[in-house]
Image (tube, rainbow, N blue to C red; front, side, top):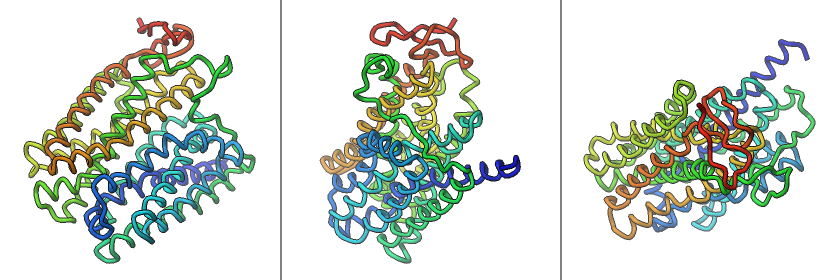
Length: 426
């Protein structure tokens, strides 16, 4: 293939990567604007409603090793194609019955998204080389864009076709992504399956696996940062329209507008992190700003819910910047690719495993207290905790490797992760 052909193939693959990213959160975010209709139609309790957004996140943690195994056996590109097709089928199937069918379809959606979560980064790294970091930033923004798109349009569609039709129609987006992905994969000339390393390294032992990250406090901070970020994001994504409906008697369209604003502003927040990350030595300052913004969202909804536009805008910036920062520190805290793989595996298991409880916690407190004061205060406390964890995860140290200074100001913590103290760069 000549240079022009390679560039066209690379551009097409970039478009496919971004469209896959759009699909990897959209079906979850689409539920929030139609929750009142769904609850009334199916007779769902608040805790059961929470499972609709919690189950996919649990899959992100629990199914990651299986997704990596599937990618090794089948190849990354064919696996992602299969995941997109499963996502399309599950998006339709989950609205064809009662609560049991809804939850089963939701699990299938989570499994499909997990395959994309695990296998898309190796494709990006292998195809885009030196531009992989920039493409990763665009991909993170695409996640937010997909959530914003479905949150904005699901309620208007529901007014025409009902909540079932509004949720099912997003299968079309997954099918379009599947077609573009297949065409891009063929054009890229990568017919040979891409072998990928497992996204989760739980259970790895021996020299080949490298030193364990499970005993290192900075690695735990990185995992907990993703955990708290996930808790806050999915709690707001699930319950924001309901909060406004209960505290302001807001209409469904107002709740949908708030959910859309939260997701849309997240795109801006996600794009800000790559622009700011190189301006500071370490990421503690950026973490403090993002954590404060999370607290402002919940404190504002408690103290003056009528100003929801301002609070949701601040919270949207927090969620976009927070997810970008959570994934960025995984790379910056790692001395090399092997350490990054181990930290990423730990962060994914800890982050999504704990983070999935966010909607359940908020919904359980709402059901127990009959109001939103206690749930919002609790989420504000989690925002404070996010800030404290960010102060550790954002320190300019790295895990693994010899003590040499990194370009981003990070100094490695040494190979003995069991007890070696992280060294700061001088």
